[in-house]
Length: 176
Image (tube, rainbow, N blue to C red):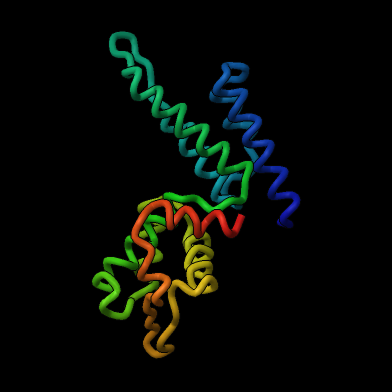
């Protein structure tokens, strides 16, 4: 699938999700009209979110907080579908994982593949996307590779200075 087709499918899925949230189409309609979610992880994320919508029953209604959370998360996914921007949550989780592994920058970072996998599970982001974040940290000279066998990385002096959320957000903003 080429990039233009993927972008148009994501925008179509976001448009369908907006119609679904406004009540214009039903759950069955959106699930049948969504583009093939097997090929695109972002559309798959939207599909799974719609499937997990809080259910209403005769006696028990889900709390307002659950519905509010569902709608907020749905709009986050829609925004994620429409943009190709890096997400703060994913970058922060990756950075925290690497920071802890390096014992607060005192030791080299080992088992980078395991950390990519863990961040992928925590943030529901594919490993390929996590690699994009890692490559950004390497490209911006916050982390350097110190060995190929085994793969070892370490934080540079500029990487050691990143301690706040605003500093992580600044890294993401320089790319977009």
